[in-house]
Length: 505
Image (cartoon, rainbow, N blue to C red):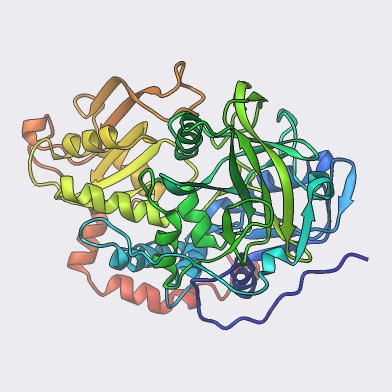
């Protein structure tokens, strides 16, 4: 009989949470977690479910899900696997400690952004608290397996797509320490190669790649490393972000956002410190001069990535974990992968400095490459200037849509309405033929290179080719000339629905 992971009773308060498990308990408390007794991933059941879940509920309303028992690699595992663990902006508000959390996703986006915005300094730096090492037993080292006993096949790593080269560790945070550069905490996909070997996909120029190259230049033949599963949500989020420079410690920012230091414990087989309250840790060594074939793998864009002829790998020396670890699968290209608010806040603060009339900025989770911008337009050319600033500085952007400040960037109907009624393709479009882009974009014929489009869907002034006079917006007229109307409708709203479903005309 499968042991059911207990649902703890948590208070109505919010995070930050010291452990991933506390965060999942909070999701359960707020009705943001779905428990499923079993799934057969050898038939890609969890993948199919993830597609159906997001398709029906959308990114903002789909809950996290916990599969209590799962079949993978021909074996049934009694180790829970979680998916979509950062669902919507309400989950972000929970994780970062917004005092009052509701399921109003737009309100939670703004509340979480304001909450984190108060923490970000005027110099663009986050608060920092150095991590600390704990004494005594650490939850993540309750069970220790070394050398031949450290068998990766004992755990349900999932092959998410039939086209994947095999099972992958998709939500692992890779910890590397360097005597000169310090610590690197980052998320890289890790293909399970055999029972004691995994790939480590550090792209050229990423910090993990730089750490390994630094060690190689010093003459080191391998780099000690650890792959952490189930770190607390904020540590995981900072590890997936681009908030630090080479040599900056991501754990200091995580501690600053948590309001308490990240607690660490030294590895049992490698000189690498890892979060003491994580779910599972894989320790090992990454050869600095050896590589092997890796991939293909279904990436975040929802397309299969290419096979890589050469990639780093890690030889496993130990596995430690809680008595019944909870593992996470990212379901890349299907579900939301991480907490995105720290990056969103940092980007917004940065662009506010160079675009003084910037009103709002939003990157929809479901439309990778699209950035929505609203401005308080004052002068001719403001829309194009704002769009070009975003295009020049944002690696992930490909289509930048600029609208007036009265347009709600979270309302796609309003965005499309602005495109249909305020935008003239000529002269309100700018094509940038070639610039730096995101390397995983499946439409780009050359990695790191893309074209971009700026769409100025603000009301065009006469000097920009717009009409001499724009007609009034009907809803604005209603709100200005009959201010009591919307309040009346709000007051009577429940009564309008009394006869629904009773056959009334």
